[in-house]
Image (cartoon, rainbow, N blue to C red):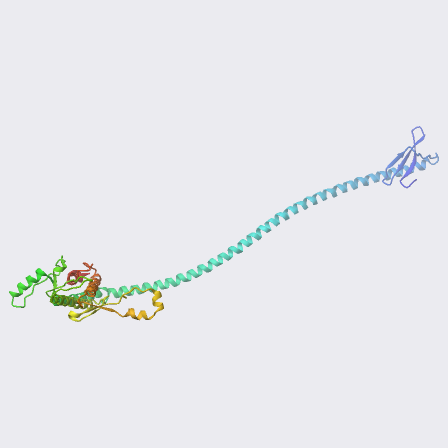
Length: 372
């Protein structure tokens, strides 16, 4: 017997020994013909018993091998199942990781949305508070409006104001009638008719004038207290009759006094104030004689006080030059235009002083002025 197995002689059916059998540790028989073992006949029985035991051991080894094979197959199946489950678990882990990332992204989006909702909620709360304050203010304003409507509809309300305004205009109309009586503005034909009627009366009859008489067509034919106003040519020397100049100065004094009275009765400050003096009246102009820029005023602040002082222009002829008097008549007509615009009437023109005065008194004496 060597280290790898046992060699025994194997006899042929005819009794010869020509084959050697090797048994390894697994119980398998290996027959080798190169180195046969010769067994004596006396030891045959013992050798056969030994071979039989080896054969039994071989069968048991085969059974063990089959059992091991079955166990190995079951272990392999278990390993396969375990590997399959492991792969499924890894796949589920990947899916879970994807869902976790999606959940994290959704959580961030949710947080941002929550912050936006919170900000909008705060803004809405502020808007609601403002709306409540506005509602309270509106309610207070509505109550004030109701109170104002109640006051307007009461005894001292809008109707009373209209009545007071009507009484005021009636009073103004009465005062303007007095001015019109003091300084009547008539045409040359009306003056002649008036003088004829006065000569045939007892001295107390007057010609009645309709407040709706038409506008004069020629201002040169109008007179005030029988005096005709002569418009002097500007920038030229005037060598006319001194009596005619005095009449024109008196007429301008009458017009200036009438304009001053009407402006005080209507409570309208004149743009160009008057300094009354009869035939020696003056009109003031607060505009500077020379245009000055803002840089000039900054460089010389004393100019501001100088420009605040009005410039007087005479409503009569001073010397032989008529420029200042002509400009004074122009400013007087501007005052008449201001009064006409105050009652909603347009001026007849820059050289129609008496016509504008007559139109002013005519409109104020009409029913339209009371009802407007």
